[in-house]
Amino acid sequence: MSIDDRANTRPVDHQSVGDAPPLVRAGEVSSDRLAARLGRWTHGEGTLAARLRRGIAALIASGELRPGDRLPAERALAAVSSVSRGTVVAAYADLAERGLVERRQGSGTRIAGVAAPVAPGQRPGRGEALFSALPNTIDLLRTVPQIPELAVELIRAHQPRLDLALLPEADPAGLPMLRELIADMYRAEGTPTTPEQILVTHGAQQAISLVVNLLVGPGDVVLAEEVTWPGVTDSVGLRGGTVHGVPMGDDGLDVDALEVAMARLRPVLIAINSHHQNPTGTRLPASARHRVAQLAAQYGVPVIEDRVLAGISFDGVVPPSLAAERPDAPIIVVESVSKWAWAGLRIGWLRADPVLVRRLRGARQLADQSTSVPGQLLALDLVARADDLRRQNSRVHHERLRMLLSLMAEELPDWTHLAPRGGLSLWAALPIGSAEALARVAAMHGVSVAGSAAFAASASPDDRIRIPFTAPDEVLTEGVRRLGAAWREYRATL
Image (cartoon, rainbow, N blue to C red; front, side):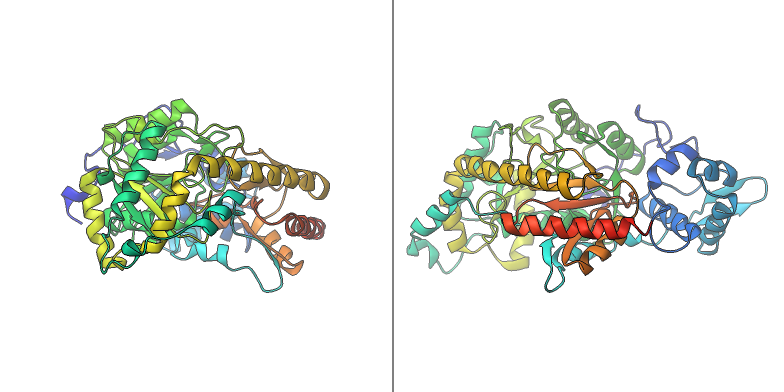
């Protein structure tokens, strides 16, 4: 990748940008902030020292800890983490043996000036865990929504135009009539769009992968929420890039922390899921959305906005895309019909600057020529009724959420969660213990679930389970019952 292709090449002082409290200030790592970023590192596999070493190594690999940064004194970190000083000493010694830190008498422990290996949580293929339900278990791994009745009616009534379906060649960017219809949909939502800004793909994941393949190269940094859809992190990892996780709050991405990370790390791309975020279900407020668009324009960094769950809204609020906030910002909007119409129809698209669309069109042609024409023709019928389908889908899954919350109150009353205002899953917190360890116990009880590790962009507390509410009522009921039994067994061992 040439220097001209990178999103942001301006050198920026990374020590004191923005108002958010940074992990590192003037080269000194705060013990309190480091403990907070490491999360529940004391829970998991291996000795305490090994767990601490892995957590710090992940922060080094993500770029949040940089060469020359000085780690807290052993006694200070031990005090805030409620462990012995010997645990911290052993972890620092292990990091030094691996070449990740340098220890010198009188100057403390500093991050070494060499590239660190990719953190375990960022290895390509992490998302495979979501498609690996064990045989004879209830699958609470994937968010495969029910097909709305209206979608069933439209699919059954569909009559494809064979004159188009039998064309010997198709435009890699998509059928002109579908691109026009998608552009119309964006214009109606408040985002000015032309057909030349639309590229039709085999689902939203292909759209994300095409953008990552074009914009990310070895060693590049991509910013994303600290927990996010692994299709983003895996795609970046395959390109040799590194995903840096930005902290989140109850309303989603911490935009102050995003600005600090943009200034410190100079990313080539930002990937966010601001509307009913997967897995947390958060919805970014209007002021924060506007600021993200402003930052994209200010720094010249492209932003992928994943909107596949935006239309599944339980209170009817569907904000416009980030592209509507700043027309001059390099926003790439990604959507598909999979979550609100039919998961089996792999039709997605992206909306971007026409120049970028032309570049992606060429890359798409090398990947798989074009999207299935019969699939695009069916998508025409569904996109034309997008508003109705989204409303019906939202009603169905809002009822499923109510059912799940009732089941949780019965089977898992000590777990905590914030009920999402849209989307397809609940992000639930364990009061104690390790989500990874619980998932293993749950598998023995006949239910497959995914914990924090499956979604962590960088170092993250191992204390959350994602529970989709997309399964049929009887399956969801039995799945939560089994999860409750697994939790009671696991909790008794703590």
